[in-house]
Structures are given as structure tokens and as C-alpha cells.
Image (cartoon, rainbow, N blue to C red; front, top):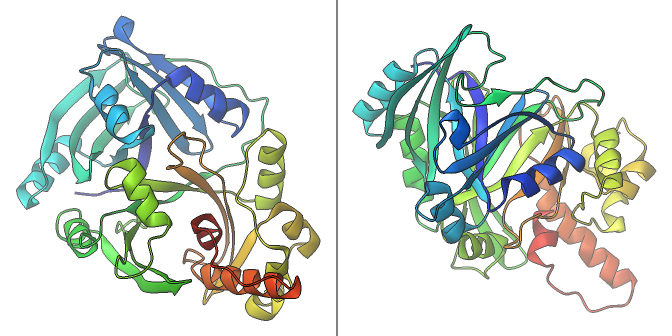
Length: 367
């Protein structure tokens, strides 16, 4: 079993066309295909969007009994499928079930004139499935016969390159079990773990990664012995475990953030005082500090280099799923140093203004 990369993600949404409009006009994705009852996808409407190596499917159920309809009723719009590229989907399915994965959909073959795609599905975390995908022939075909492809529009620039990671929030007490599941069943390795405390809140985090290094899950669990925070809010609003945010890598975060902001994407705010001690904390930054301050881009450092990142506000009514833009300049970690730095910056900002120091909001802590 060779899990190579993330083939695509699928969001179950209340209105696929409306969601596609946002991801197209604001985030820069392009419509590449669509399917529905007329292509054999019974009781659903699915739109395929792409940007760089990121492929995203938006699916709306057309009946109350469709899995997408039930998902949206319980969780709201969110990531329902994380598809994994493998060499042999049928073989990987059999091996994963043998190791203890819950088989959800047995292998299915989609055949076209120049391509063959085999898919199968197993349980992942919460109500999120992993779709195993093996492709042969024309890789430009997504699901031959089921998704009608449209020509790409090469007029726009590609600001986003690939899926860097997915941040997954699980209920308290389930982190260790989830880590074991990905280690023992999927063959992932634990590459990073930490316990973060700030402003009376606390969380545990473990990062697991496929042997290829191209599938990374940041698993998060709130510590409910402390004050409730933004992870607790996600679990309550999402009604259980799920993808809290999607990390999208860019090669030029300044241009990407400026462009998306002009298109209407709203980003989480950063206190101006965060930048006062930035270079003392992370060393010289190869970007104008004034520009980073204007855009709200955060900077962190690990043994490999620097990391630039920023989070969007959630575009969903439940305030659950949001996006992270990330530029890696050698760094391999995920910016955890920014949590403490931002809180301390907020304290300095309030003290300088002669205002009583207050605990930050969950959004400020996560930013």
C-alpha cells in the first residue's frame, strides 16, 4: 500500500453553485468539471474545481436521504472526503480493511476512452471518509463517464500550489486513539507533538504524515480541564470531529494575500504590536515588515527555516471551516510559536493603551 499524495478533497455543501462562486471569484479556483444525474451521479450535483495541484469537489445532495444532505444537516458545509492517491485502490482497500479500517464503499471502476480510475472508500475520522484513488491513462480525466470535464482557463495566475496539510479537530480524549489509527492502519508516522497553553486555554496537537511526506494531518484536541476555547467552539458548532482548516501552500504569500483580499476574502486580524519584536524572535525576514504588518501575515521559525502564514475568517454560517495560506522557506513545522507571541503582543498593545489586559478571543489566540 503506497499512499502517494492527496488526490482531491470533497466538501459537502448546501449549495454547490454558490460555494463554487466563492472559491472561483474570491480564492481563484477554476471550474474544471461537473456531474449529476445526467452523468450517472444519482441524486447529487458535484462541481470540480482546481488551482495548482489542488483539486476540490463541491457536492450537494438533491434528496434529503443523500449522504451529502445528511452531512450538511448535522455538520454544515465542510470537508467530507479526503481522497488519497494510491497505486492500486482495490489492493489498498483490502489491506486497510485487514488492518482494521471500516470499509465504506468497495472498489468501483470508472472507464473512459483514454483513462481508467478505480476508487474505494474507508472510514477516517468522525464522519470524514478516505477515498482511495488509482489512476491509469489520461490523468486529466477526473472520473471518466461520471464527471464531464471543461477546458482550463489559462488566463489567471495560480496563487495556490498544493494542499500543505489538513488540521483535524477531535473531541477530548480521542487524540491518542486517532493517532494510533493513522499509525497502525494507514502507516503514517508521528512527526511532531506538543501541548500548548495560552490565556487559560490548552490543547494537545500531534502531526501524522504519510511515508511519502505529501499527506499531513495536524490532529488537535482541546484540554477541557482549562477554559473553553476555539477548538471547543468548533466541536460544538460542527457537532463532532472534522477538518477545522485547510492549509494551502503558496510560493508568494504576500501576493496571494493581497490578491485574495482585493477579491473579498477576509483574514483574521493581527495586533500591530506583534511585529515590534518579530525579527528579535525569528531573525531577519526576507520580506518588508511594513507589508507583512499591513496584510497581517505571521512569521515563525524552526530548525529548517522560516514559515509565513495567515488564516482566513470562516466563510460558513457556523463559523467552522476556514483556510490557511502558508509559504514555507525551509520550515517543516506549523507555526505554533505564533500562538504565544500573538498573546504577548496583545498584552503589550493593551498595556501601552492604558487598558486592562483581557484574555484574547479564540480567534485572536488561533491567529
